[in-house]
Length: 255
Ligand code: AMP
Image (tube, rainbow, N blue to C red; front, side):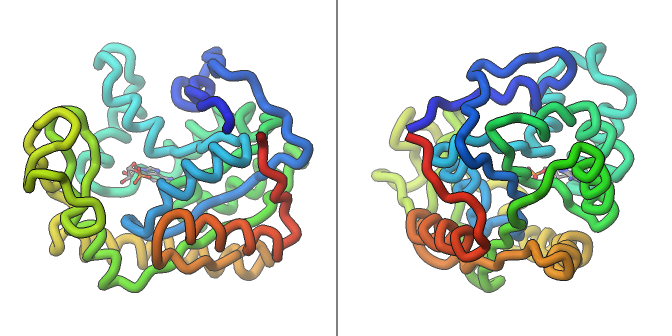
């Protein structure tokens, strides 16, 4: 199993260096992950990175890391981006693209990359296309995870997070030993505000409007691979590998 990278170069940008040097696999993977909130995209990203020796490059993680910077260390653009994020809106394309351009070295990484949460709009996808063309880098595939809306609502509305250690549970799929209490630290389990059924439906509407057209964009370019996100994470992972093989993308696992 591969050692987990702290992705410092991506998260912090600038001169920050990653704790674990690039793995240089024989066939590095260069993938984009698409999927509505709650389809289990994050879990698949973790499994793919761990087993394919690549890095999960999430724009959401850059914003979350920026939240913990002291206000004096945040640029005005980053400060404005955090306001959008707090409201649950998409951050403007120009800000997101500036952040990605500052981190173009991560796209050149010999370990490959797995883009998660970027691109989020067709304008971002077009800018990414230009960036990759200039760097002479080709995407292997765009993996789009699909799940019926009722199952998404059930997954997200059943999710509970520990107020103390942040461990994640699910009322039916992964229940705690004692109802409403964390198995690890005994903390109270809470429901995220945006995981309430009404909020989930709203998030899905935003997704349908701004992010779904991306699937068409990549389908037209012959890169889209649709994967059913039903069932357990390992089953979905197996489906992902089979889909990548079908696409002719590398599937050699790192040891
Ligand atoms: P995520 O963890 O990917 O759901 O991202 C969390 C939040 O960060 C989103 O709700 C947006 O406010 C912001 N964000 C992350 N990535 C992007 C992106 N590519 N474009 C616009 N906003 C983004």
